[in-house]
Image 1 (cartoon, rainbow over the protein chains, first blue to last red):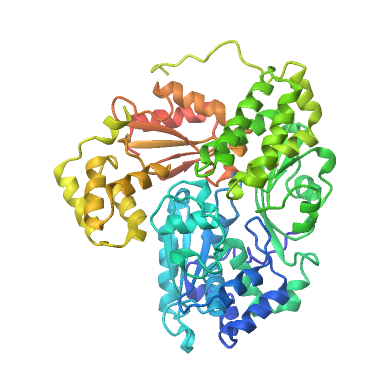
Image 2: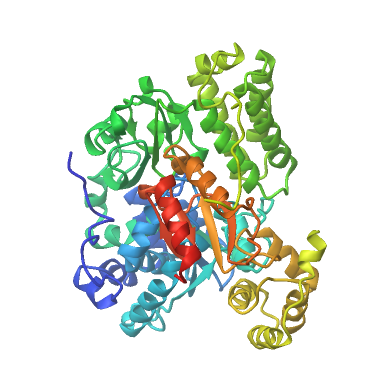
Length: 434
Length: 166
C-alpha cells in the first residue's frame, strides 16, 4: 500500500528550514494566490475545499475562520496549536521539523482571511529542541518577505511569534492555551464567549492544529478540485496517522482519508510485533475509543469513526498486543487524565479520581458488578458536565472498553488471575547498589 | 515540607541576574513564561525569593508567579539535580516495557520519583508522552532523548551519566 505524500511531500528534502528552499518546492505559492483574494473569497475557498480540523474534533475550518471574520474589531489573531500532548501522537513534531514553512503559510492565509496581522505558535515544552529550528525558519521567511510587512509587495502584513508551553496537557484545549500564552495558569475558560469573538487577549481568534494549517497552502496552490479528489466525500484530503505500540513498524504515515484501519496495521506496519496476537486498538490517542480485533475493519475518516462510537481524533493508532490487559491500559489512561486534570471543574477533578479508584479495585479482583455501573454513571456525568474536552474525553476509553471488552471486565470481577493486573507478592528491592 | 522547599535561598548574584531578565518585561504579563524559562537557567529553583524578584520587576503579584509556576510540570519550586530524568509513563511506552525501565532507574539511583539524589546529580520524574513514540520506551535526560530502552540499556545509560558529564 503506497502512502500519498501531500503534507509530507518535503520530508526528504534537505534544508527545508530555509524559506528559499521551501519556495523552490512550491512553498508560499498558495499564499501568493490568497493575497489576490479578499477575506470572503479566502473563506469561500476553504469552504469549498471541505477542509476539516485535524486536531481532534473535525470542525470545518472555514466556519471557524468565518466566526472570527464576522466578529467586530480591527485587531484579530491566528493561533497555531502545536501543543501536541495526546499520548502517542507525533505527527505535528514531524511536520514542524520537516516543513515549518507550510505551517507559516497556512497561518498567513488564515490571517489574510480574517484581517489579522499576527499569529502565535504555542509549542509544547517537550519539543524544546524545535525552538531554534522555528526561529531560524521564521527569520528566513522574513528575509524573503513571505512574512513581515507588506508581504510580497501586497498591503497585507503578518508576523508570527513562537510561545512555549511548560508541560500541561490541558493547554492543548484552546481556551486553556490562550490563558497560558497570556501568562496565566492554563485553565480552560467557560464558554461562551467563544474564541471566534473573544479569544487570545480578548481578541477574535482562529486557532488551528498544525496539520490543518499545513493543508491550507496546497489547497490554495493546487485548487479545490484537486483537494476534493483526495480522501472521502465528507473528509477530503489526506491524514497523518501515528502508528505506535506493539506493531513491527512504528511511525507517522500519510494516507487519504478513508484508508482502512486493518490495512494500516497489517500491511503498512507489518502486523503485531514479536509474533503476538492483537488484543485491542485505541484510535485518536488516550482520549480515543478502545476497540476489539473484530472492529478494526473500518475506513478511517472523521464521520465513519464517529458513527462507530469512536473518534478519529488526531489520527493516532495505538496497537496493543495480547501480552497486555485492557484494564491495565484503561488504568494507565486514567492515571494520565487524573494527573493532567487542571482541577478547575468538579466533574473532571473528582470523576477521574473515582474512575481510577474503581478500575484499580476491579483490576485487582476486588470489584463488584455494580462498580461497572458506577463507572458508566460517572463517565456519562463527566461527558455531559465537564468544562472542557479533557473531562469529556476521559469518559471515552472507559465507556468503550466496557462495551467492547465486557468479558475481560467480567474475568476480573470473577477474580480470575491476570498476569498484568493481579497484585504481585514480592515488592521490588531498592538501594544504591546497582 | 513544601514550604521549606519554596523557601530555598538563592544566591544574591543569581537574583541580580533574575532582576535583569525580568525587568525587560515590565507590565507584560504574557511574557511571564519566557521570563521563567530564561530564569530557570540561572537559578536552582523558582523559589520564593526568585518569585518575589520576578513579581517586583514585572509588576505582578508574587501569588500570581507562584500559582503559575506550580501549575506547569516543567517548572519547579524545588531545586533539581544537575540531570533531570523524565521517564515517559504513557500507554505507548507502557506497552513496550516502560515500567521495567523505570524500576531499573529508580533502583539504580535509590530515590523515589520526584526526589533528587543526595549528591544533587539526578532528579527523577515521570512525565506524560514525550511525542517520540516510534522509539518507545523513551526517557529524556535534560534535553537529550533516549529511546528503544530496556532495563540493560537503561542501566548502561545511567552508569554513563553517573561517571561522566554528558
